Length: 198
Image (tube, rainbow, N blue to C red; front, side, top):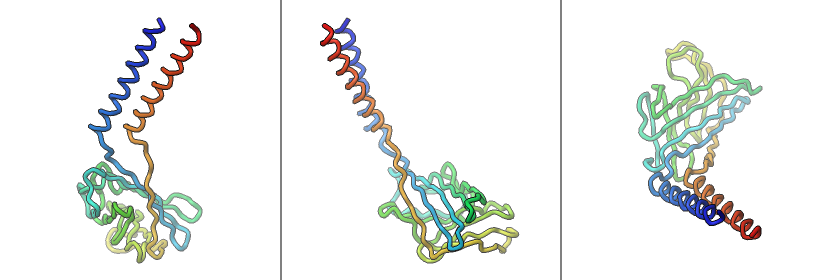
């Protein structure tokens, strides 16, 4: 009985290690996620995230306008007043498609920083929607649309400062590797217990 159990544990450990190696070869890391946050001079804020496929993205990602994006897979943002009440949430890019004609986005993947012209949030033709635009490093403004023609109200602004941070998500290969090590550890402990009981 002891030998059968030991063989089962060994087979399971070998299978898990094989799956780990196969996953590493066939499924390299793809999506990379980032968070960003902005604080206006009057206390309004924006918090959001975006993602792209790191296996196909160039060093500089530049996107603009409505329709399919080149590299960006998703981008969402939420705006808050100084009391942290939510003003609105916008999925500017979803499943690789931008819904805003005004959308502008520039990101340097090597420095992990936003730069240049920036325009996210509203832009879908709804009166009263919020949008966030300007130039990173110069001036970024939170505005509210009034008539979907050319009139908007300035809500808050800052000197163009916006923070970006990467989101650490364990890759499937790392999870499978931990699983394989766990199986080996369990097998080793059970083998020691069986040896002690004999």
